[in-house]
Image (cartoon, one colour):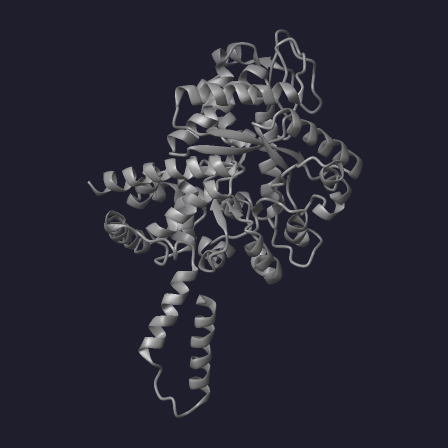
Length: 501
């Protein structure tokens, strides 16, 4: 009905434009067209109560202050914009806002690296070696570890700190674990260089977070940091690599899943209003067809054995240098062939390489019935696919800071999600790898999306729909979603009243 009315109005406007007898445009038609646009965008169908309207008016004034800044944060690289963002009253409000769920976060990039350096590397039996490419590797061991190629002799960190300046050493570790630099445009002139540095940071963290005791502590700390950013549920993309014990013994994926279940249960005991977390098992998209078949079979086994904690499956890694989804079609057909459901949550469209095989990943993700689309940066270039995603109610997981840092877009006002938001495309906001970018939970990404994508058009209704979407499009059951959204709205109403005081 709304679409027919809009088309009717557009028709009238076109007829008048072509006819010299129509005179000046009718102001009422102009107002109707503006209203139709507002109704279509995310938040356009949300009705605010009186308290929410008061907060919305306050939020509008705060936005105007940020819009008038000499340097507009979403138009700047995040590494330079972060101090400005954290001084913003809008950001302070967003930090307090209940944000629902974080649905696109990677396992070894969710905890602030200061915790890894200041806590984990100070524990007993932590060794370090320095690589030929001026990076570092870590490992925990009861005895001197075996030499590693392209790396110096392993050195126990505790006595090393006694010989060197501990502060300088820790700062060097932090630099290796993040992408942060004061001059990102010079340090990362193109996507190849920034992706190489991005993937290297995971290798640095690997030896720390795969040590079995740290694996559990890391997940717990990740849940805590997101919870403190007012997030009530998480879905974590996890490679589930073998964890290791101090004597070098290796643990299986089953061990990791049991560990995740135990940590989530323990966390919920301490924080009863936290709804939980689930795992999306992932594998790097550089594997071959045979390896993919084996991995999907592993995923099916994990899905059968851990239905409470296992959400589904995805491929990770840079799309432009990895194999496209269509290459893995034999592996991805296995769940249907075996009659065992395995939900997919595919990264797709994290590229600006239009017309390539990789550029078809969004289409193929939908053909394989993905539950969500990770990033979907390329979606606006595929109108048919975009409409199909809308009809299938498949949301895009938008990660603004990640897309900017990894050089898909420089000014977030030009991010394709701005157009998707205006069109009311199903969408959630997430943070991808916040630890590597120096971001916190979801608040920095919400700021960038709210200020950069929506400009002055986005408002409290936009935010409310986005946070509800994060639970609506989660892997929770229908009953769990209903309860989760009800709990969220209680938190939301409390937030609105407290913010008005």
